[in-house]
Amino acid sequence: MKTMHEGLQLFSIGATQAQITEAYAPVNLAVFDGFAVRLGKFQGEFERWHAHDHEDETFIVLEGAITFQTEIGDFHLTPGQGITIPKGLQHCPRANETGPMPLALILEKVETKRLGDG
Image (cartoon, rainbow, N blue to C red; front, side):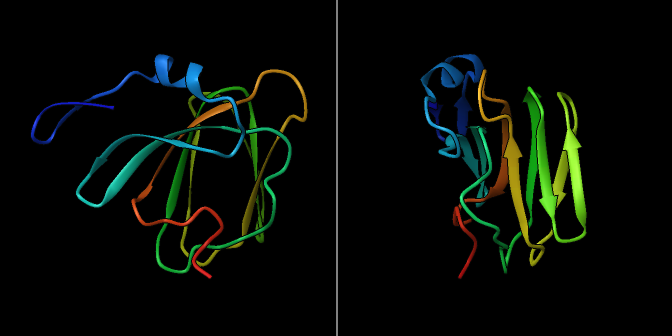
């Protein structure tokens, strides 16, 4: 993320994507008004089911396929598709175990914790 003027932020998905080597370790692309735009890679199943008690979380798949397992069913997303997981809904993302790691934008509040609020 590069700041050129207060509030102005430029970022490159391609350059940032190349820097991400670990699944489920998203990187901030931009932060504004208490929200973060994060870029993350996915592989295998996330370490545990969890929920965020105080905030929603949105994912937009850019490359590959990701299944968002939720307590109300599974949602299989491919490039160009997105999902908003509402606060309080138990979920656990899952992607292929091997091969290229799927890539997604994650839109959430800056303070959103990786494994939920509690």
